[in-house]
Image (cartoon, rainbow, N blue to C red; front, side, top):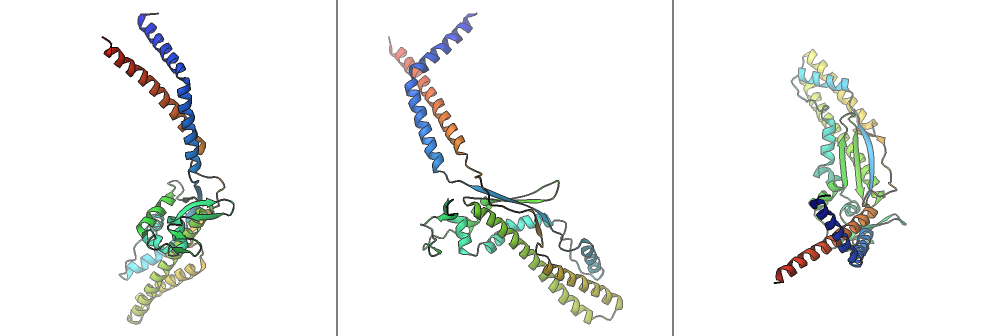
Length: 302
């Protein structure tokens, strides 16, 4: 064994003896860290995550869409191709401020997003922050209602939306302190997005029908009349499908369910990490104090 190895071994033995001599101090620091870690973990609110798997519904038949586009171009109308980016449009709409404003018009829904404090598992009821929202009379405390932009930011933190590159399916997740509301919010989003797109298509087809009826009356060219009648027929079919289809733009592959287990935080992990941090900190304190103080003593000794 060379001299360097001997010095290294002596140093490790010296450090071990030092730590052993301070074992009570280390134990106290570790115990205090474990104590505070436990109570910190217990104080944290549990969050629950619900999710749903969906597919984009081709509510307007592709053949009819291409026919509609073809007929329209023949008479100088440009309706564009709105089908190719339908999934992106759905996601952008759900994440938009206008859509959030639509689904949060009810004060209780708004409060569930911005004024929640805890959740009572026994009664399955949300505990609201009383300084902001009075749940007994369903009213906001005067001048305490959070702003729309604050609520929108919380909404975007609650929901997460993604599209599978392989299948094109859409996954929507909602994380909230209430497992019941996590599922409820997903259901509201799906219901309202179907209503929004159905209404949009109905309005477009209604305007198109009005335009076509006026043009049909003002033209005497038989071929153009036939083309316009075809466009009328397709728009009428579009309106019929809008009335029939409940899942107009999004359809469930897998429904959202009320989660039974929390998604976060991991309280045992917090306790373990807190205790480990206390152990490492206590060792560092012992070693630093010992060598720094010894160095100062040696320097002060003539």
